[in-house]
Amino acid sequence: MKTYKILATSIVAFGLLFSSTTFAQSKEKTVEVGGAPMYPSKNIVENAVNSKDHTTLVAAVKAAGLVDVLMSDGPFTVFAPTNAAFDKLPKGTVETLLKPENKEMLQTILKYHVAAGKWSSKDIVDAIKKGNGKYSFKTVSGGTLTAWMKGKDVYITDENGNSAKVTIADVNQKNGVIHVIDAVITPKS
Image (cartoon, rainbow, N blue to C red; front, side, top):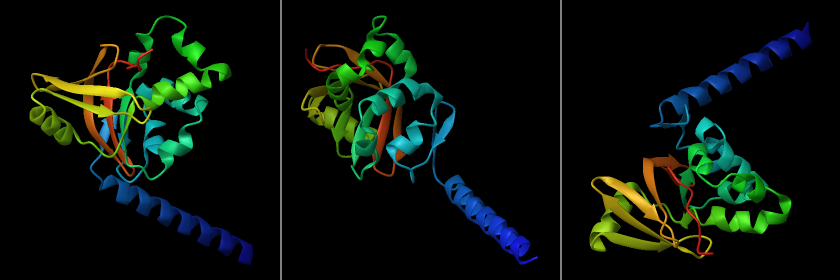
Protein backbone atom coordinates (compact mmCIF):
# COMPACT_ATOMS: atom_id res chain seq x y z
CA MET A 1 0.00 0.00 0.00
CA LYS A 2 2.91 2.37 0.81
CA THR A 3 4.29 1.87 -2.70
CA TYR A 4 1.01 3.00 -4.24
CA LYS A 5 0.88 6.09 -2.00
CA ILE A 6 4.46 7.02 -2.91
CA LEU A 7 3.73 6.45 -6.61
CA ALA A 8 0.52 8.49 -6.42
CA THR A 9 2.30 11.29 -4.56
CA SER A 10 5.08 11.29 -7.17
CA ILE A 11 2.59 11.47 -10.03
CA VAL A 12 0.73 14.36 -8.39
CA ALA A 13 4.02 16.21 -7.68
CA PHE A 14 5.18 15.72 -11.29
CA GLY A 15 1.80 16.95 -12.55
CA LEU A 16 2.00 20.06 -10.36
CA LEU A 17 5.56 20.77 -11.49
CA PHE A 18 4.66 20.30 -15.16
CA SER A 19 1.50 22.42 -14.93
CA SER A 20 3.29 25.26 -13.10
CA THR A 21 6.03 25.29 -15.74
CA THR A 22 3.43 25.28 -18.50
CA PHE A 23 1.47 28.02 -16.73
CA ALA A 24 4.60 30.16 -16.28
CA GLN A 25 5.54 29.70 -19.94
CA SER A 26 2.00 30.52 -21.06
CA LYS A 27 2.35 33.94 -19.41
CA GLU A 28 5.51 34.72 -21.43
CA LYS A 29 5.31 36.94 -24.49
CA THR A 30 6.10 34.46 -27.24
CA VAL A 31 6.57 34.75 -30.98
CA GLU A 32 5.45 31.86 -33.17
CA VAL A 33 8.11 30.53 -35.52
CA GLY A 34 7.64 27.43 -37.62
CA GLY A 35 4.36 26.61 -35.91
CA ALA A 36 5.78 26.66 -32.39
CA PRO A 37 5.89 29.33 -29.68
CA MET A 38 9.38 30.57 -28.89
CA TYR A 39 9.77 31.17 -25.15
CA PRO A 40 12.03 33.96 -23.85
CA SER A 41 12.87 31.72 -20.86
CA LYS A 42 14.47 29.11 -23.15
CA ASN A 43 17.80 29.35 -24.93
CA ILE A 44 18.34 29.54 -28.69
CA VAL A 45 18.71 25.79 -29.19
CA GLU A 46 15.80 24.84 -26.91
CA ASN A 47 13.51 27.03 -29.01
CA ALA A 48 14.94 26.34 -32.47
CA VAL A 49 14.47 22.58 -32.22
CA ASN A 50 10.69 23.16 -32.03
CA SER A 51 10.45 25.22 -35.25
CA LYS A 52 9.42 23.08 -38.22
CA ASP A 53 10.84 25.86 -40.44
CA HIS A 54 14.37 25.45 -39.05
CA THR A 55 15.05 21.71 -39.19
CA THR A 56 17.90 22.18 -41.68
CA LEU A 57 19.51 24.87 -39.52
CA VAL A 58 19.20 22.69 -36.41
CA ALA A 59 20.75 19.72 -38.27
CA ALA A 60 23.60 21.96 -39.42
CA VAL A 61 24.21 23.31 -35.90
CA LYS A 62 24.38 19.73 -34.60
CA ALA A 63 26.70 18.59 -37.42
CA ALA A 64 28.97 21.58 -36.79
CA GLY A 65 29.19 20.81 -33.06
CA LEU A 66 27.82 24.25 -32.12
CA VAL A 67 24.91 23.16 -29.89
CA ASP A 68 26.80 23.84 -26.64
CA VAL A 69 27.92 27.27 -27.87
CA LEU A 70 24.36 28.35 -28.69
CA MET A 71 23.13 26.99 -25.35
CA SER A 72 25.71 29.05 -23.43
CA ASP A 73 24.99 32.39 -21.76
CA GLY A 74 25.76 34.57 -24.77
CA PRO A 75 24.13 36.89 -25.49
CA PHE A 76 23.93 36.22 -29.22
CA THR A 77 22.03 37.65 -32.14
CA VAL A 78 21.26 34.88 -34.62
CA PHE A 79 20.10 35.51 -38.17
CA ALA A 80 18.32 32.19 -38.70
CA PRO A 81 17.69 31.02 -42.28
CA THR A 82 14.58 28.93 -42.82
CA ASN A 83 14.46 25.56 -44.57
CA ALA A 84 13.20 27.43 -47.66
CA ALA A 85 16.32 29.64 -47.50
CA PHE A 86 18.57 26.55 -47.51
CA ASP A 87 16.51 25.15 -50.41
CA LYS A 88 17.57 28.18 -52.51
CA LEU A 89 21.21 27.02 -52.39
CA PRO A 90 22.55 25.04 -55.35
CA LYS A 91 21.50 21.39 -55.28
CA GLY A 92 23.75 19.26 -53.06
CA THR A 93 25.23 22.20 -51.10
CA VAL A 94 23.59 21.35 -47.77
CA GLU A 95 24.40 17.64 -48.08
CA THR A 96 28.03 18.49 -48.85
CA LEU A 97 28.31 20.88 -45.89
CA LEU A 98 26.86 18.30 -43.49
CA LYS A 99 29.64 15.81 -44.26
CA PRO A 100 32.13 15.37 -41.36
CA GLU A 101 35.08 16.39 -43.55
CA ASN A 102 33.43 19.81 -44.10
CA LYS A 103 32.77 20.54 -40.43
CA GLU A 104 35.15 23.53 -40.27
CA MET A 105 33.58 25.17 -43.33
CA LEU A 106 30.09 24.57 -41.89
CA GLN A 107 31.14 26.10 -38.57
CA THR A 108 32.43 29.22 -40.36
CA ILE A 109 29.20 29.64 -42.33
CA LEU A 110 26.99 29.15 -39.26
CA LYS A 111 29.08 31.50 -37.10
CA TYR A 112 28.73 34.06 -39.89
CA HIS A 113 25.00 34.14 -39.04
CA VAL A 114 25.75 35.09 -35.41
CA ALA A 115 26.75 38.43 -33.88
CA ALA A 116 27.90 38.88 -30.30
CA GLY A 117 25.46 40.75 -28.09
CA LYS A 118 21.69 41.07 -28.20
CA TRP A 119 20.65 43.27 -31.13
CA SER A 120 16.91 43.94 -31.16
CA SER A 121 15.31 45.15 -34.38
CA LYS A 122 15.08 48.61 -32.79
CA ASP A 123 18.83 48.55 -32.07
CA ILE A 124 19.56 47.56 -35.67
CA VAL A 125 17.21 50.16 -37.16
CA ASP A 126 18.67 52.87 -34.89
CA ALA A 127 22.21 51.91 -35.97
CA ILE A 128 21.15 52.00 -39.65
CA LYS A 129 19.68 55.49 -39.21
CA LYS A 130 22.80 56.75 -37.42
CA GLY A 131 24.94 55.22 -40.18
CA ASN A 132 23.11 57.12 -42.93
CA GLY A 133 21.26 54.08 -44.23
CA LYS A 134 23.71 51.27 -43.46
CA TYR A 135 25.30 49.66 -40.45
CA SER A 136 28.12 47.10 -40.60
CA PHE A 137 28.92 44.77 -37.76
CA LYS A 138 31.23 41.84 -37.10
CA THR A 139 30.03 38.28 -36.86
CA VAL A 140 31.31 35.63 -34.48
CA SER A 141 33.26 34.16 -37.43
CA GLY A 142 35.09 37.50 -37.86
CA GLY A 143 33.27 38.45 -41.05
CA THR A 144 31.17 41.54 -41.70
CA LEU A 145 27.45 41.89 -42.30
CA THR A 146 25.76 45.10 -43.41
CA ALA A 147 22.24 45.96 -42.30
CA TRP A 148 20.07 48.31 -44.34
CA MET A 149 16.41 49.04 -44.94
CA LYS A 150 14.01 49.04 -47.86
CA GLY A 151 10.84 50.72 -46.68
CA LYS A 152 10.21 49.27 -43.24
CA ASP A 153 11.96 45.97 -43.98
CA VAL A 154 15.42 45.21 -42.64
CA TYR A 155 17.91 43.40 -44.88
CA ILE A 156 21.27 41.84 -44.11
CA THR A 157 23.92 41.79 -46.85
CA ASP A 158 26.93 39.48 -46.74
CA GLU A 159 30.47 40.11 -48.00
CA ASN A 160 29.56 38.63 -51.39
CA GLY A 161 26.72 41.10 -51.99
CA ASN A 162 23.93 38.59 -51.28
CA SER A 163 21.03 39.88 -49.19
CA ALA A 164 18.52 38.30 -46.84
CA LYS A 165 15.32 39.90 -45.61
CA VAL A 166 14.40 39.71 -41.94
CA THR A 167 10.96 38.05 -42.05
CA ILE A 168 10.39 37.63 -38.30
CA ALA A 169 12.22 39.97 -35.93
CA ASP A 170 12.79 39.97 -32.18
CA VAL A 171 12.33 36.33 -31.25
CA ASN A 172 13.73 36.83 -27.76
CA GLN A 173 15.64 34.06 -26.04
CA LYS A 174 17.18 33.59 -22.61
CA ASN A 175 20.62 34.00 -24.19
CA GLY A 176 19.93 36.47 -27.00
CA VAL A 177 17.60 37.08 -29.90
CA ILE A 178 16.78 35.42 -33.21
CA HIS A 179 15.82 37.24 -36.40
CA VAL A 180 14.45 34.85 -39.02
CA ILE A 181 15.83 35.49 -42.54
CA ASP A 182 14.81 34.28 -45.98
CA ALA A 183 18.26 33.47 -47.41
CA VAL A 184 21.55 31.91 -46.35
CA ILE A 185 24.33 34.49 -46.08
CA THR A 186 27.93 33.49 -46.65
CA PRO A 187 31.34 34.89 -45.77
CA LYS A 188 33.77 36.03 -48.44
CA SER A 189 35.24 33.03 -50.20
